[in-house]
Length: 220
Image 1 (cartoon, one colour):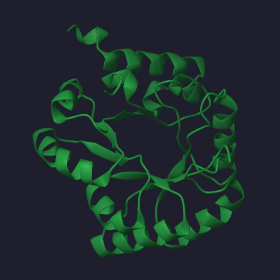
Image 2 (tube, helix red, strand yellow; image 1 turned 30 degrees about the vertical axis):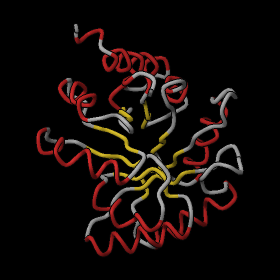
Image 3 (cartoon, rainbow, N blue to C red; image 1 turned 135 degrees about the vertical axis):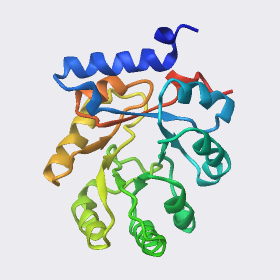
Image 4 (cartoon, helix red, strand yellow; image 1 turned 120 degrees about the horizontal axis):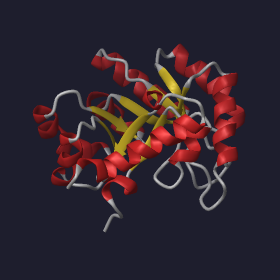
């Protein structure tokens, strides 16, 4: 396959185009290739094309899949983008370079303890329940300033804010709201935007986009 027409290159072109429209630099947007549920043989083509930042949903799946790939490919950065149970905090701190789903005090305490024990600090995005949806994880908007204070007090590095907007509603206002919340709280990182809306997210200031389907195709 011509590398210029691979899914990865097409996504990179869309990122560059959206950044240009927003008068931003494409290199200021980190593409997280969401490799959850995909086996190693589907991930290696992206690694061979130079992609190094990947997202996984589950700690156990990442532990099974990535050690061998990381031995073969230098410079891989692993992001945990799924919900994290407090009892998996220790494994998550040892396995991942960035965590995107810090969303509640019990997890905050578990992660702080795990980081202290491991002697490493893993940057975390605080997930915000931007649409105030009962079924979704995420810190309530009203509780965000206090939660950020607690995280900083526990010496957890805060990379920024993360959100998943409500399905089937125009996402731009939710992305804009997250950007405003980040600005109000002195944060620059914005993990927002997936395959269906990452261009919109970039125009609203996303620094990290989590793209799976556009790179790997629909999951079976």
